Length: 200
Image (cartoon, rainbow, N blue to C red):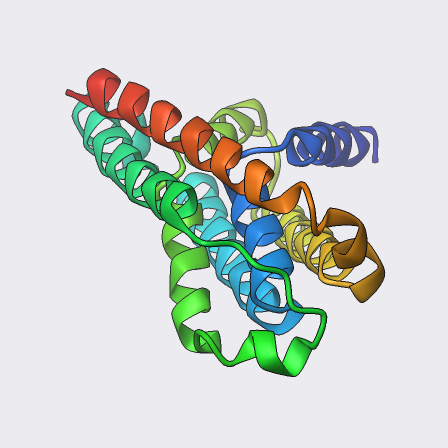
């Protein structure tokens, strides 16, 4: 029980630190719709499930330096692409969710969320580190830990999507959202460039 609490607390604290996934969900919720942001959230949760399974089953090739560098470079390119898209976007807030939801499909956003989760080295390294600390845990315990973490990721991300996609929140963000989007875009692009340089 003590081990589970330690794992749960460590995972949740890591989840609270805003990162690439948070920015993707936040931007999608505020400029598209809660529905599309939920697709991003589901994609991220699926990616976390894949990474947890790989790390806990001993298939974590991420620990190999060459693979890690390749993932960092690919993740960096993805972040630069997302960052440029954020920076160039003409952001206008529509309070009518039906009007906002028609711009992109749920499946496309699911794919973006999946790519974001899989190409984020922070996620992969966290789960590999956690797996290394749980070498004494049995298969059933690892399965329960993994299911718990994926569920918490999904619940947290969906909560962010719902909170930031509400009309009340949007009405407050109308003036500052374009600036926040450009700032997030710049941050992601710089972070991506750093990852590319590290990976190469």
